[in-house]
Length: 252
Image (cartoon, rainbow, N blue to C red):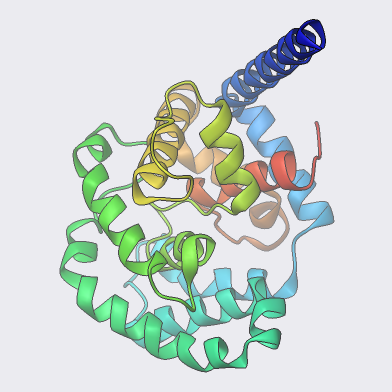
């Protein structure tokens, strides 16, 4: 029995090491512009949907140097995104669906000064490291709302400040928490510390990417831009690759 236990322990350890190495290769590959764009093409060809595409149009004027959308456009888009993403939960718990609009507006209003403090901070910029605690505080404020939760907080914040926040879901946060060697293992998965570590890793990826290619070049090679002239920001591109690789188990 003792030998059997040791054997199982050894197999599990080796299995984890293989997946850790696989994670490191994935992160390294994400820093390659062609790998990133290939992942975005997989997402575009197989998983892009009409609602998400339509919601992206609400930010297009801003991405081209125009004004930020007003509060009600932003909150309406965030609500539509969460309703689409978590439609099964809201179908089974209509009480939560009835709350989501009020919850979003309340947390948006209460955290607006902190959010505005981050409006000029973008993923891939060295100064983001000075604002990680603020990123975590915003994430925690949204995630504590029962109608929003951990995944919803990341998705809502990405829509509210798309140039900074990266979305995740349970499979993505587990994958990063377990296999990212720079990720603190002592905090709870999905906590604000967990999201800070996730954003820190995403920022390193984005910074290394932008040393290899100009952001405009990435934008113009994304299939959404090639086919429709729609700008996709870097946090969205990383999310598309994370979702395909980790959740959908696509490999390219």
